[in-house]
Image (cartoon, one colour):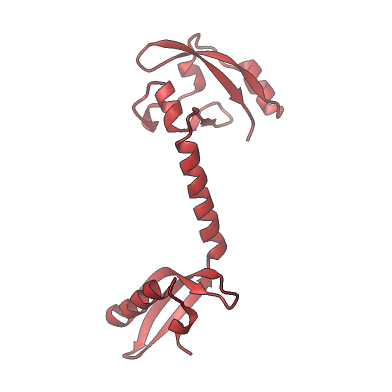
Length: 166
């Protein structure tokens, strides 16, 4: 049985290219799809090295679950980043840890660097900490209300907010 017997039209081109590279270069590492006996494509991390002109040795680890999780997270990240609502995440000390594109637009920033390490108070028009909001969120409650914001360009606006503890 050959390694290529573990492939079909879905996975064969990438596998063939990887193993040809092993033979010509002497070694290679990659994540490659293989066809499981169930017909499902599983992903393996393959580190291979040539041990003779017509042979190689490979160390293989099934990384399918990680690959599925990575793909799922990428889809969610794209959905959050492209959302029409502003979404921001804060640390327990009220510092921005993430803001999607719409949140950055609402705040009038030119990018994530403009909010990195800053607190929500930095954008609050009255520059007061949201004590009631933070207390509710820390108790696991949802807070819904309006907040006066000052954008980076100095313009003032009032925005509806909903906060939840993640």
